[in-house]
Image (cartoon, rainbow over all chains, first blue to last red; front, top):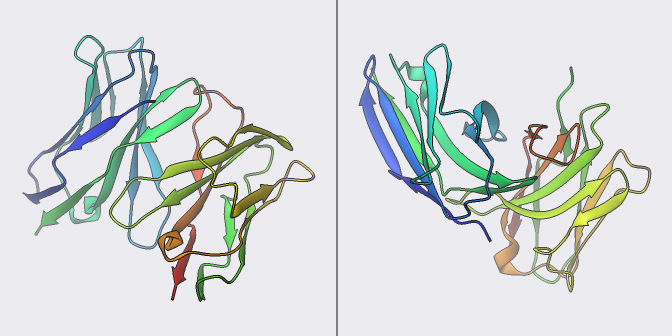
Length: 110
Length: 115
């Protein structure tokens, strides 16, 4: 099955700086790559996703890039704010089944 | 649009007892998923329903876990008997359809503690 590795496991950034989280996947047939944000006591919330026919996607301060050849994808958050503090999960899917990374705890320091 | 509803939010039981969780998906979502999220890990799929039929239950420990979605809307997940390693958050998600063209939306989960 699919194996998704996510790095780093924790990330501390100064408010206003950028944060980058990287993931790799094993199944070359995976074609859908969502990113979820999970706040304490809440369920994962979809923040952005990218499909295998697209190399980059941006939504305001959040961007995701995909390198199918290398089988890795990344989340970029610019101009970080305190409300960006949360656990972020990457995932990869072949058709419907999502396989998640282990998560990155992002802390934005004021 | 109302999100995925789950209850209860918290449950504490002793090992070998039974427990049930309930999920109401987003209106109109034909596909429903149950995930297990152990502390410090990403969610792991337990079972997927398309309407009231099972699409994938390959990761469901069928000797103790069961799930149903009788009328193609609400779903229940049951554990009987519970083991210590079942302590986790149980998340329900739903999507319009079964494939990756339809993003999955999660509820806030039920946090289960086994004593």
